[in-house]
Length: 246
Image 1 (tube, rainbow, N blue to C red):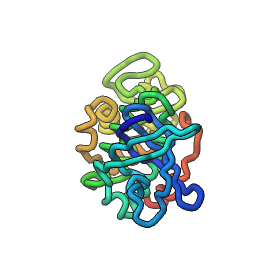
Image 2 (image 1 turned 135 degrees about the vertical axis):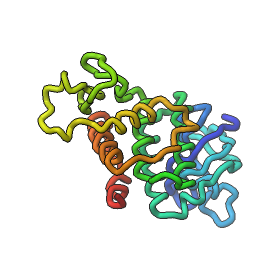
Image 3 (image 1 turned 60 degrees about the vertical axis):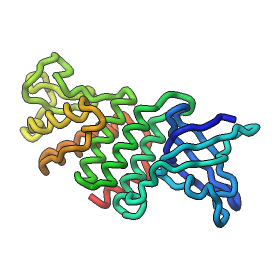
């Protein structure tokens, strides 16, 4: 018996005639896989535990070669996310990225917290989904050890100047040290630099409390797309559909 764990269902797939295979991101044991036997039978008490985004407390039993869900108590369903197509698409992307960034048996509590507050932001829909996406990407990669350097030039350490972004350098480069800058549009808007700094430094409870201009959103899109291509070596299935919504 593994006992009670707290976590969120990242993925759920059908197995056999009546079972489901769950990928759960937990506080206590990082990411783990568990099977919910009979969860697809009518009136199964485990049906609720097998939906993506569902957050709660699981009681697991360790079998000979796999974990099995015995009981489940829901803390949050994120029903609004599940019922709206666009919200569901963004939520699915978050879970797919969380699955990629987390590891079995390792402490990924910060990733779980970030995923939870991000889904809450989608649920509340007070700021645009594309902005939520970019905030999540930047913060999730930072937790994983791939934080963009945005507080000073990666070449000389100069602060408070005009910057360009270079993904291969890992962050911002001041204009004086950027040998590749060929067009004036490469220079980031000062508000974009401030937004990057805020995203990477503010506490989670204040992370989703602002909106940005169209120009800043475009620059965040460009930065995150380039950085993800440089440091994430997996194509996410949900990205094509997500991009079609933009």
